[in-house]
Image 1 (spheres, rainbow, N blue to C red):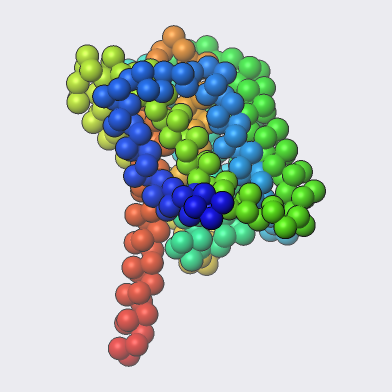
Image 2: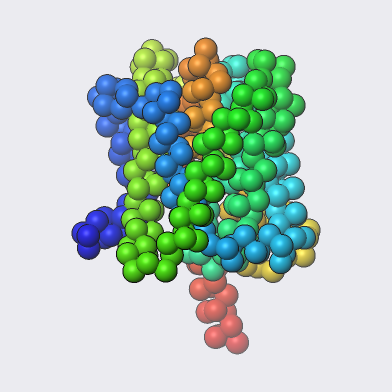
Length: 326
């Protein structure tokens, strides 16, 4: 068990590296994750959300009641900035319909689970981060289909009711089950060990989803070459970076502390791209390339979040050094 816990910690610390390695491996051996399709993909995402629920406590949900204004500002920033930026980028980059659907879907999804880890690493407001993740996840069944209808309705007909039910099944229910198990069995001696294995399991599941996507779009990537990947990556990079920048700006306009500004920046910029991937595969199956921006976002958001957390820490060290020289 000790080795399993260490492996889980290693995977959590090197999530982006592991996901990229799986993506590259799948590109050269496309059948490796060809089994990650349809229902299997949905179940894997459900496991990821279950791991999130297992780490949440009743205190995490009390944040929603204790700090309603902070959470309201955060939720508004989350569901306003990212869809609008995605819509703008689709127009600026003149994306083809399939890729446009993918980036819009990423923009309309709730905040990513790993954003809480990034907030912790950069000395952000972790309670606020968890509260924002909870709020955006709870709002996702309504907000994501609604925003997709508004931003992508002219590209393709959106099955808003089907999307609502799908998000409910793959996010809210697994998170609820995880929270129930945490509440019921948290006093058991073995439960902290189980919780310590969750980060590694979550990263492994996300890597499987990315592998499944690469397997799906492999032929298109080969046929259209490096240009397709780089063009899509450029859009994902802009979307993610503008999310961080505008999230920080929203926090500054709201008069937040430095810790809260860091948190809202990370929460807004990092999306639940795993959910976007599953939704793209389920509802836009006729447009297989729609999953490509989602898969790239899965890997890149982890990398960029780590980089941003490092930049925030470097700013702290610089500020401390300046203070000591005075």
